[in-house]
Length: 189
Image (cartoon, rainbow, N blue to C red; front, top):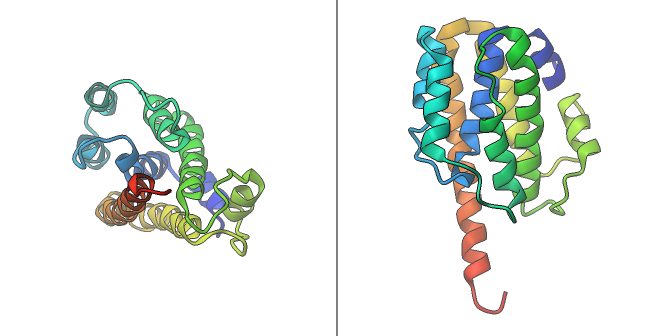
C-alpha cells in the first residue's frame, strides 16, 4: 500500500503519530533535545493534553532563526503548524504536510541527491513509485510507511514501535547533518 493510501486510511492516533514521527526524525535540524517531543508521544499513548504539550514543545524550541537553511525551516514549520485539536480532520492535513516536508528535507540533505526538492519524484514516491528516489529519501519513505502500518495494525500498542522507528531515523539524520557540518568546516571546500 502506498504512503498516500496509508495516510488516507489512518485514524486520528495514526495520523498524529505519523506527523509527530516525521517531526521527531527531523529534530537534529532544530537543535532540540532528543526528549523535546517525548511529552507529545506520551499524550498519544495516554490521551492526555496534546494542546498543552504542543505549546510546551514550541516554547522550549523558540522561534525559527535559520533563515538560510531550508531544511531547518521546513522542520520548524512542522512544529509550528501542528494543530492543537487532535481530531482526524485536524491532524490529517498536518500529517500529510509533515510527510512531504520530511521527504523534502531528506532530499535536500541526501548526498546522493542533487539537493533540489524534486516535488514530482517525492509525490511519485509517496504514491508507490520509489525507483528513482535517492537512498536517504527512500529510507525516510519506508519509515513513514512503517509508522502508519504499526499504528494501523496495533493501535496504541504500536506507539512504542513507531517511536523506535523515529529514533532510528533521527540517528541517521543526525549523522548526515554532522557529516555536512564537518564537510562545510573543512578547509578548501
